[in-house]
Length: 334
Image (cartoon, rainbow, N blue to C red; front, top):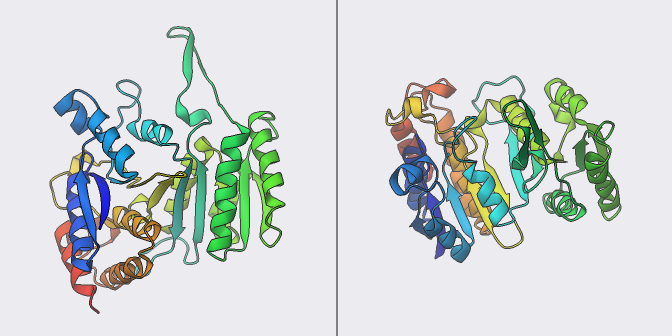
């Protein structure tokens, strides 16, 4: 029995969480869900977007599945996602983007995996006022230790999954200290993996190349903010954020999450697409070495995508969260 912390999240989070737990239970996943709360729901209920009880549960069980959380824009509490990644040193954010069958997208041959450094860089929000309301500064922190962890994790993933190439993305032509250090560490780590092709590329060129010829990329590793942007771009190549899963992995803890928004405008309407969150749950199963179970569910999803009458409207279907969930459960035994 695997004890897993479950955070349903905000907006559509509870609906897609129910879908995922239903599918995993039907497939025979041996999981004991420890339900906790975070985000806007926790703020409204408990006055704290990241309650101590939730942190204690993750600290105890070391693995979590988390739905989408609402982060206020511009004001209000800071990102709970960022806080949890930092707290548990979940230094690798892993975002696969793979073309799915029966999903219309601009490309039909995308199969790449983004490794994003998850604990430092500009994205952590280390900001200060020089002069309030007129001059603000944001500080990007890049360390050799954190850079080596995520870059080595990317190479180890490529080695384990029999992938051929690692691409490091940077802006070292301008950010010579921070991105320069990240690139330097990449060159050093690459020497330990002579059988894996290595290249580095400037981030703006990378963005162009990804939308022109995404098939040239395999495993990609980059800093926090660049990874945040490029991983969403990668999702767009295969149909959007509703179709890509995500994992946050550290040395002794892991959190799997839906990376799309909480979509409060459709919450409670049975329209939410659970695929992205389900793919994150499959990454969780693989992390637990439940590979055959994960593959069985994945094939059931592929079968389900053939029938647009049961799929949600965002992927061209006429169905609902419920009909999609029921169809996946039925297709588990095909």
